[in-house]
Image 1 (cartoon, rainbow, N blue to C red):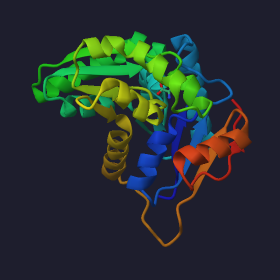
Image 2 (cartoon, rainbow, N blue to C red):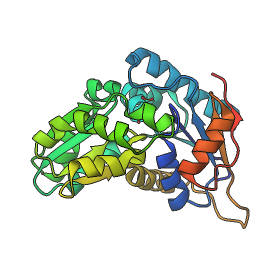
Image 3 (cartoon, protein in one colour):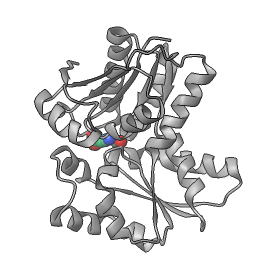
Image 4 (cartoon, rainbow, N blue to C red):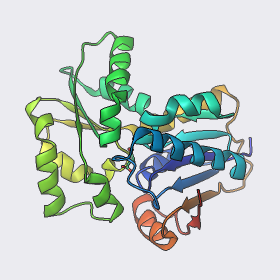
Length: 270
Ligand code: DGL
């Protein structure tokens, strides 16, 4: 199937998922939209994020004829997954359920944590998804969920290490440390870029879980069952990147975060 996979996020965060998808499905064409002109989504009302997610999803379907949509943003997944699943004429894959499954699979003690934006944590999406993943595996799991406002802004500025980020991380992660978790899910696709700092604050006994790989596996499995995987024919896969913000900044920082597949970015308008 020659149609591309569409992906979107509020900005650079979904590139963590794009990396995993490109690595796992190197023959697939991809169109990624980063809504950097309207980031961050985390502090916005759920109704507004739903509307943004709907615009992005429909534009990928109408302008690029995508065969599947990966909602590479936890905040948008938490706010709009039900709407997208009922409205979109293509496969919809989110990051919340795969992340919750990976978290439950990673814990030994059953004490787990999730960090995300104010919107994601406030929505209760992870309380429901982790409870469902625990029930499916017969595990008894205790979840501590904490919002980390400010993390996304550091990543969008390209500041992923240093004293300022560490001080903020120490303050925001205190409730997770106190809960004594042994596995922590990075429930925002921007956070893997801060993994070094988060890991240094949490210490070596806490496993950091990232939903990107699990989401890429879910995408591969769903595309395979639907018979939608592209058949390799010698043509190199095309990866397109679009942004509603400054496209030269998107290409510059995005290229450093994602790797060589992101050299140029094109404008995207809502
Ligand atoms: N990367 C988005 C997420 O996974 C985030 C954020 C934002 O714009 O606040 O939630």
